[in-house]
Amino acid sequence: MVELVRFIAGSLVDHPEEVDVREVESQDSVVIELRVAEGDMGKVIGKQGRIAKAIRTAVKAATPRDAKPVFVEII
Image 1 (tube, one colour):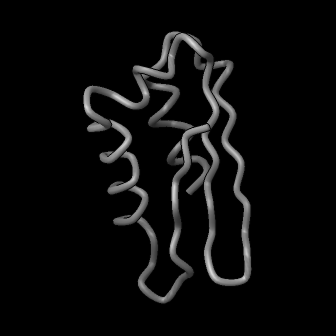
Image 2 (cartoon, helix red, strand yellow):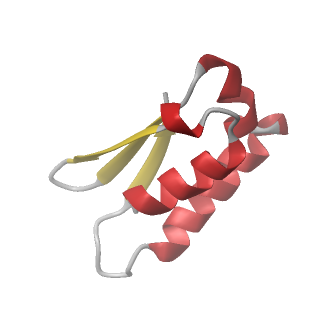
C-alpha cells in the first residue's frame, strides 16, 4: 500500500523527491501517513478534497477483504 500511495502522490506533485509515506500499524488498523512539500499540498488534496478522496478509494479497493482496514492521512 505504501508504494501505491507513493506512486500516486509522486505523479501529482512538482517535487516528488519530497514525498514521504510511512505506515503505522496498530492493533486494529493500518494508517498510511502521507507528507508532501508545502507547495504541493493543494495538488494532493485537490478541489474540495476530491483527489484525497480518490487516493483513499484506491487504497481501500486494493486492500484485501480479510486484512485490517487501511486509512490514509495527509499530514
